Length: 166
Image (cartoon, rainbow, N blue to C red; front, side, top):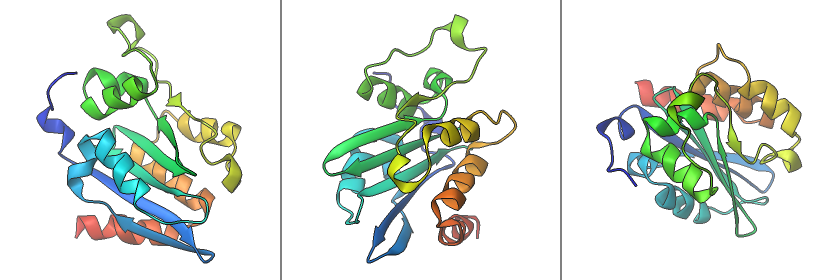
C-alpha cells in the first residue's frame, strides 16, 4: 500500500452514530481514525447500539466512506472508487472489499463500491442509496447529510458537523 498522503489527514472527519434505547447517539470520532480503515473499524466496534454502530467519514468533501459493524460483521461503502487514485483510505476500503484500484482508463466515471444495502434494515434500501450516490452535483458532505436526514438523525448530525466549523 502507498504511504500516507498529506491530504489524507486534511479536511476529513468521522461521525459515529448508533441507537440506544430508541434514541440516536451521534458524536465525532478522533481525526486520527479518518485515514486508517482498521482504526475506523475498531472505533465503531467499541460503540454500543441496538443495530450496531456506524461511522460516516467525509474526506475533503470529495468522497465518503460508511463503516458499519453489526453483530460483528463489518459492512463498508465507498461513495467513489476513483478516490482510490489519490486517497489511501479509499485504497484501504477497496483492499478490504478485495477490489482493484481503478486504472487511468476508468477515471471518467464515478461509481460506488461495497454494500449499497448497508442501511436496508433501517429503511434506506439500495435503490435510494443509489439515488443519493448518483447525484453528480452533490459533494460528499451533502450526500452524508441526505443519509442522516433519511435515517432520522439529521439534527444531531448537523450539530456535530457544525461544531467542526466553529
